[in-house]
Image (tube, rainbow, N blue to C red; front, top):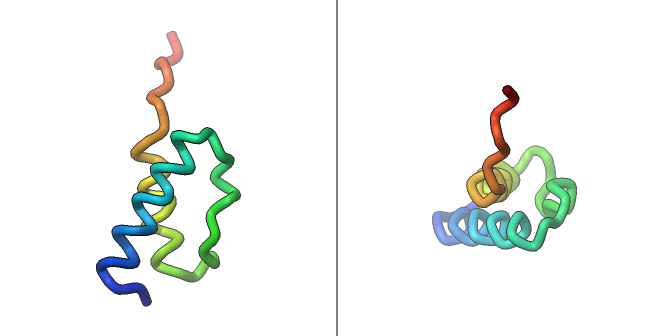
Length: 54
């Protein structure tokens, strides 16, 4: 399991990846890692919102 600093870093790296428009599959953490969850959370937070379907 990651430390608080590792988790915060993973969130920031996920946000940076989303801003660069990298695909979510570029996450460097294994599927069973809490750091993967943090990375994806950061990625999702930085994605541009999509327009709702009308």
